[in-house]
Amino acid sequence: MLIPYYFPIKANEKARIAEQSPRPFNGRIKQLPASGRCRVNCQSKLCVAHMPPEDFDCVVIGAGVQGCFTAYHLAKNGKRTLLLEQFVLPHSRGSSHGQTRIIRKAYEHDFYTHMMAECYQLWAQLEKEAGVQLYRRTGLLLMGPEKGRDFQLFRDTMERNAIPTVTLAPGEFGRHIPHVNRSPGDGAIVDTTAGVLYADRALRAVQEVFRRLGGVIKDGEKVTDVQPGSPVAVTTASGTYRAKSLVITAGPWANTLLSHTELQLPLQVVKINVCYWREKTPGTYAVRNRFPCFLHVDVAEHHIYGLPSNEYPGLVKVCYHMGSETDPDERDRQTDRGDIDVLSRYIARHFPGLVPTPAVVESCMYTLTPDHHFVLDCHPSHRNIVIGAGFSGHGFKFGPVVGKVLCELALGRVPSYDLSPFKIQRFPPHSKSAL
Ligand SMILES: Cc1cc2nc3c(=O)[nH]c(=O)nc-3n(C[C@H](O)[C@H](O)[C@H](O)COP(=O)(O)OP(=O)(O)OC[C@H]3O[C@@H](n4cnc5c(N)ncnc54)[C@H](O)[C@@H]3O)c2cc1C
Image 1: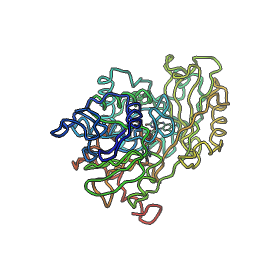
Image 2 (image 1 turned 45 degrees about the vertical axis):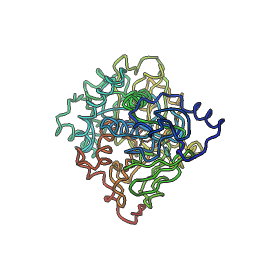
Image 3 (image 1 turned 30 degrees about the horizontal axis):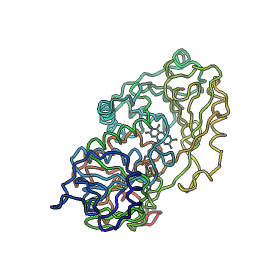
Image 4 (image 1 turned 60 degrees about the horizontal axis):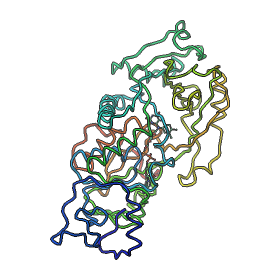
């Protein structure tokens, strides 16, 4: 929590600040002036709580996976970085919480597959830095009508990019993947690089390494105003911070923050019912029995995906890749269960070893763009404001590389990847975006 140095602070307020700032700060902060003491007289020589607000190179808003990795890369580049989060961490109100996510190279577009090579390396690097396991290889079974457009797009991208795969002919499917009913005409290819990322654990790891690198995280601090300029100023209930550049990675709240900068993107926020289904015989679809993650395309209006039973023993996560529109502050008032009905029918037909009624339903949100591609770009009018948004339900695996390119944009460097698929200009003017 930062209190600008010009605020008078009462004794009881000091105690409250001390209570709310339990973590030691390990960063490199310039020494305080000649007196050698903080100006609000807290007697500290290296006082982060009371240092002048303009002291940051970069402020990042939002401590989901994208904001955390952006802050991590900025700190690795020696930049004094502040990561602001509206909720007390950890929290389950955005898009990055929960135990698991799928990581895969199988994609419909080359530009995602190209980014994945480095993603795997950077995830492995974080595992080493934090000393925890974040990835478990399981493979991903891609299923769908062999002549269908989506299945062919995935297959062609994997072939073009020489992704290691195993194709399962109809005659051998049941031998390798028992307890799944394959539809006649469905193809089946396994992306053998794919697996599970331990999501909550990954967020803790990246935040921990960011702190170790000298980064500052202030949680429970909602940004209420952004004043573009050089420096850019960001206001929370606790004060105003200034920085050379700002990165907005606010997930479902992106447009709320962008409204302070006269920009609105065509984003749609939907609530996802995260459903877990009980195995009739425990272990049938378990990670320890080498059951893979799966993605079934062209089987309903939107894809259906799942992960082996792992985080909750005996329960398999199977979700529909779409939900119903919601206000992120009122997520739990969206009670539509149409997606669960689709999933129940799907489970009954394809997964005979699961009870077709969900045992556990959790909530999460997607922030969708019209083409389901990300937004990774500078603000069109304020180049020192960088935007990472619209991750459209598939952004977690890309966190390390998204963070790297958002860091590069914030530092005015040439990004490591061709970002044309992710530009704001791709949206037609005056559709839902007001540029
Ligand atoms: C059910 C589900 C399954 C998914 N499965 C996969 C998968 O298998 N593989 C995959 O790659 N991806 C998957 N995804 C997508 C992935 O999880 C998201 O793309 C990713 O988490 C988005 O991260 P984010 O940082 O953009 O958003 P968030 O995690 O929502 O982070 C944004 C943060 O900004 C904070 N914030 C907002 N406004 C303010 C403010 N004013 N002041 C301060 N802080 C603010 C929020 O509180 C939040 O913490 C899935 C998503 C869901 C919901």
